[in-house]
Image 1 (cartoon, rainbow, N blue to C red):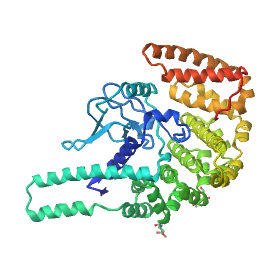
Image 2: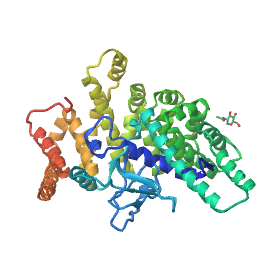
Image 3: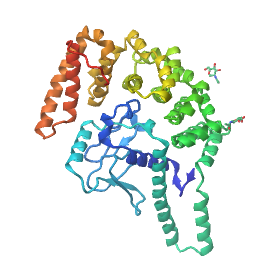
Image 4: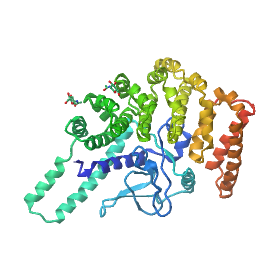
Length: 470
Ligand SMILES: *[C@@H]1O[C@H](CO)[C@@H](O)[C@H](O)[C@H]1NC(C)=O
Ligand SMILES: *[C@@H]1O[C@H](CO)[C@@H](O)[C@H](O)[C@H]1NC(C)=O
């Protein structure tokens, strides 16, 4: 399918992602701004080696996980699906039609340090599409349209070069204009393609794949709802085809992100139960992964859904993922969802804004998440994840352990495995932090991790407990 200047839709999708990411993300804020850049939607990608090749991982086929591009001072071609750090210069190479990016020329030492720090995170970045406001998305979209204008110009130039007779030229240009369909029109077509009994499975999956791009936009998601698309997608969760379930969950998760209207409609349409069924039953990992993504989008900042989730035994369902074979990659996502939900509530309780939040406070008060967490022994399920080798996962788990500390302290104090793991982590990070300091990085990534480990060790030894958020 073609639209906007004849760009294949997948490429357009990629370019929006690129621009959104390029416009909106400031790397330095990712680790510091806990609430907004909450951990739920952890996007994993692998750092690329100097040859410019990316090692293949099972996540490569997962469009929800943005690949990250590491800019240098040279222009480098962006590959589809790569996300560009904020502050990078991005250009369209009119010769090749490819997008290229590099670091801005006036790179100062400060951001070099940041760059270094980022590399140390082993290429793992939190990209949280949930925190886009519609304003931000519009801005990104406007930028995208600008660059597409440039692309169209290039295309027109190409047509011109061929010296066609004037009639034929006109026809060409008309064709170009006809392709400027609105998002609304495109979504109508995609929904009917998905809903048509004449469509093959591949057609339907392709329609969902394209829809996912459009429903990220808050206004589009509302249109999607009024067109009846949301209900179709919720029913798609019930499909016997794994690929349809997976992509339906993907579209649903995208439409739900930061969109209260869609969140309400989706929970009324039975999406929560269906997602939990997927997570509780035997399904391919890819299906569960997307279902977990949709569940996270459903629950975040929506206390009513959180209550229902607890009532329906959702927390036990997530807990059961820790007992199933082959679901290991989901564990850290589950833990970060848990972290987000706990922190979301704590932050609201901490913020002293009255009136308009009161209703929300009352709703959150009924979300009895922490008692359920303690009762189901999440304390140890979480801390066991500290044994993984990836620094980035450990970082998230350390944060979660810190936030659980006031509730899980007794459990943790009796846990020999935890104290030996913490001892090992301390030794490892002492070494890495020392090396970092020798290289001139005073407040490096590893020093930070070492600090987190030490704080937890101290708290377990019974020093004075600090409230996690004050
Ligand atoms: C999907 O197809 C059915 C049957 O053809 C039709 O009744 C329904 O209105 C369609 N739904 C949407 C949202 O287009
Ligand atoms: C979903 O599937 C289950 C069985 O797998 C069935 O009982 C239920 O009626 C279906 N719901 C819809 C809306 O199709």
